[in-house]
Amino acid sequence: MPEANPKGGPDDLPPIPGKRYFTIGEASDLCAVKPHVLRYWEQEFSQLSPMKRRGNRRYYQRHDVLVIRQIRSLLYDQGFTISGARQKLSGQEAIEDTTQTRQLIRQTLCELEDVLRILRN
Image (cartoon, rainbow, N blue to C red):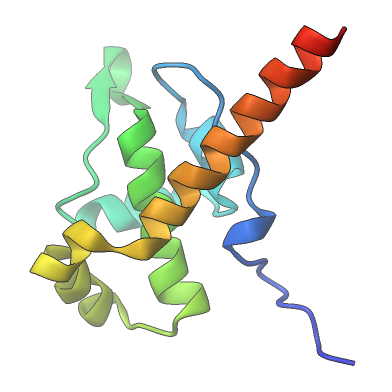
């Protein structure tokens, strides 16, 4: 029997709620990484730059959460190094990356299923 991925794959991540901003704790839960890892990734990846407000509190937007999931996939699932992941994200192929597209499709399906459940009730 195949061994399960201890870190969880992209399919194990919860759907992204339809809100505008997420705290570092919420982003951490949505992406299955610790808050200190997110703070480190902000230093390593220019694509990841949450808004900072009062007292340097971070607020991540939906696109930030998708970038975090993409970074997580590159590092944990695909075996890239930080440097390799940085190059992949900054390259032209990052624009057409299927990981992000799959996440958006999965998210849309979850939202549509919620609407269908509401309509049936």
